[in-house]
Image 1 (cartoon, each protein chain N blue to C red):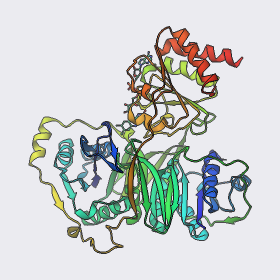
Image 2 (cartoon, each protein chain N blue to C red):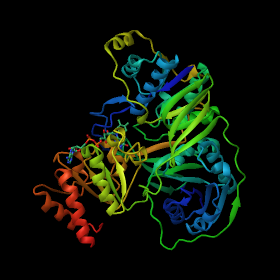
Image 3 (cartoon, rainbow over the protein chains, first blue to last red):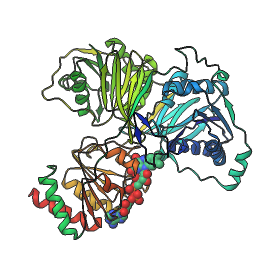
Image 4 (cartoon, rainbow over the protein chains, first blue to last red):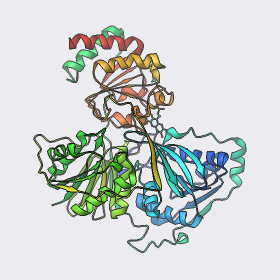
Length: 261
Length: 319
Ligand SMILES: Cc1cc2nc3c(=O)[nH]c(=O)nc-3n(C[C@H](O)[C@H](O)[C@H](O)COP(=O)(O)OP(=O)(O)OC[C@H]3O[C@@H](n4cnc5c(N)ncnc54)[C@H](O)[C@@H]3O)c2cc1C
């Protein structure tokens, strides 16, 4: 089984993000692997270990992704593709999905594993759109993957009514959520070996995507006009001291001031 | 006049309030509205669909649609969108909506935006507003396509008073089953419990409650208040709470009148699921816990001491 895993470099959400004049202030930002893609990488590596799968990752955009891709190598991914092109600067999910389609078609993969969403956009569209463009079956929000045979996997999905157990015919696309696994920490040996592994860097023309064609794969259907600061909540009243007294006080405030009890 | 198709949010055979909220918003921006309802044995919901404020009701009612499957579900929506000639297709915030919206967008060659909190038609363009980066920023996004599919974030729109619709039912033919993604089983969530998304009060437990005894202690308070009972990821990972109880970026987004965070530190991913609540009460023994930065009322103390007092005091005022 050949697995393609997608990884995106995203801004570290744990740090302060500032907005100025409609844009995010670059100063002080740090970039990391998208957390849900780390779950996707771990899922792929587990399938390699348990089911002899071959593992390739693909990352689109992000500039210098060497550190991130090496980290994934150190976790156990065997091959890495990085698609980088100036035309991708304003890419939205459909564009990413169409680029991934080209990557998929070049590689004869059986299974694509993506994170359920990227932490920078929180959109959750790319993996599902990839499947739709390819006409492949797809399950999103997956918490478990079992290989049944060469052509079938069984996945569990967290849905609205409960956990759905779904059998998929390969090739297929799944998007995973963080409950699926606990991504491993790279070990020293893996980190050393990762440094020697090549990364296959390519641009859009190498994938056969024309950027001049306005309706082509690189044309976004949505564009971010501006960023705005989120409405931040103000810290309210904090009570310390005798538990009985402050709790009674808060309850009466919930009744009389906040009108919510 | 824009034509907006709202996908009815149906759970456990009932129509959720979000359907009315979306139709109210669509009506308020002057759109002609239709709703599409997908499920099995849903005739009983039709009057509700009309009353929710729709002028046309597309109904796909088939035993094969009893359990959610993204492919057939998306086909029904795309079918209704084509018949209605919808400019915009709006899904409520749900796992079904999140799974189906990108498919519908590709099928219709429409733009797609998820977790939106507002829609505005400015000149020739449609613009949406949505949070990104775990709610740390907002984006204003311009749609450069003739059609758009969106998923509306929970709690973004309000139901209008006295909204009415007209009955005009269009039956959709059942879609083909997805033979390449076969739903074998649905392990149903515990029923009879209050759905977090509907609850006016939500009380969530975090790692601070430690174990089952702590969970049960807080559950009694939730029971008294008929509140939804939620959780941080820590207690889900620990096996004490079900997955569908997780509040946060990976779980449910809630926006109740009152949210109580009991023994929850306030990680960014948790906040992303609850910081739209009207009033937040936090109980935490660490005065520096980040949850206090968003709480309207904070009680610094040991929850095992505070929660029983909280219960008693609330009982007193409710008596
Ligand atoms: C990709 C990703 C997605 C995630 N999605 C989610 C999500 O959807 N939802 C979510 O919740 N988390 C999510 N997380 C996890 C999140 O980062 C935190 O790890 C988690 O929310 C912490 O849970 P907690 O607050 O219960 O535990 P902790 O952070 O351990 O906090 C426990 C709190 O309890 C307090 N406490 C302890 N004992 C007592 C006592 N006796 N009385 C009073 N207070 C006490 C402590 O002071 C502490 O503040 C996600 C993480 C990642 C990376």
